[in-house]
Length: 250
Image 1 (tube, rainbow, N blue to C red):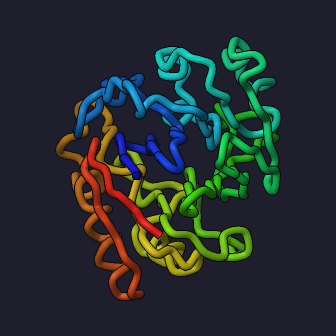
Image 2 (tube, rainbow, N blue to C red; image 1 turned 180 degrees about the vertical axis):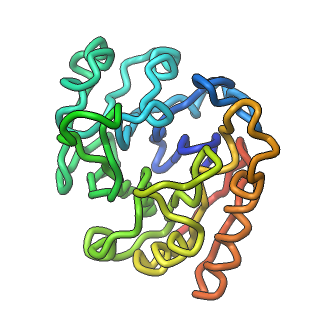
């Protein structure tokens, strides 16, 4: 089962194990306000057995959300990230740092780190020496969480096929900068990874306070545009609302 909690936060329940990606479990993040869904307040099987962090941007690595999860679930994140964001160090031995190609086994699941074409730094200054990542989760099904990324040439080499692709199709502001996919590029990513089902993420959840009337299409339309573009490539798509789940079978 795959549940989209909003933005890049997704729960993947596979083989009795729950994976949680880039948890942002709050209704407000700096100047951003959650405009769809609500702070999910995870309980029971929605609580993670492992957390995957794609990169250090605050809308992907949100320390208060990590704190709120409690427990002792491992946190898989890019190599060097704790050196650049000191707040991560309080999670101690739970941190598992990885490079593209590294594999982590969590119960019955195999998690492989793959590249992402995105600026992985916390702040857009200083040396760019912490990579952004995506992850492939293999259990009863194969799930590709792309993190935040532009389309890149060898995406199909790293992810030749998957049952589910979780693909970023937008952003949180009135413009979409470098290192992101707009809906058409995300549809090409679905095709390149031979995704049986694709779910658009990273759009329509967080929005700057007071920006309601500034290019609202950037907020409301990416999911439906992705569905239309993917249909032209004969790719299956499910557009979810925050908090909605889809069951995926082999």
